Image 1: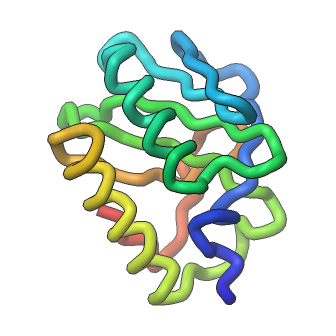
Image 2: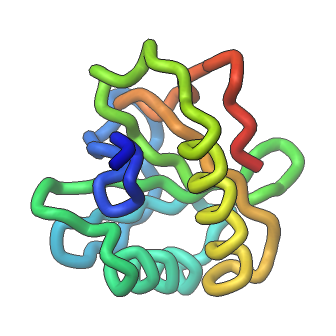
Length: 131
């Protein structure tokens, strides 16, 4: 079983010093959304995330925003012990599949999953291709 199994995909922390946006809560899940993402989309995401078993016992924080090209970004905060590890092909495939599922089931628009540190800054890896 991969360290990236979707149910335990990432360990989430609250970012420091970055604008977090408005928030919707669902059990241990806090979904922040910036002004360019609607509350309805944040609620739909939280419902999907909870109903599909992505919410665990630890508090999770996710931020929804848009990049410069107006593409919706789902920012997931990775536990810092994994920052230096290269993503395996299977892990990248799982993240790409998750982005497609979120596009179809929740957002009805292009979605990019962005793996970030606890300040919501993207973690750069040479093999990251998550679109």
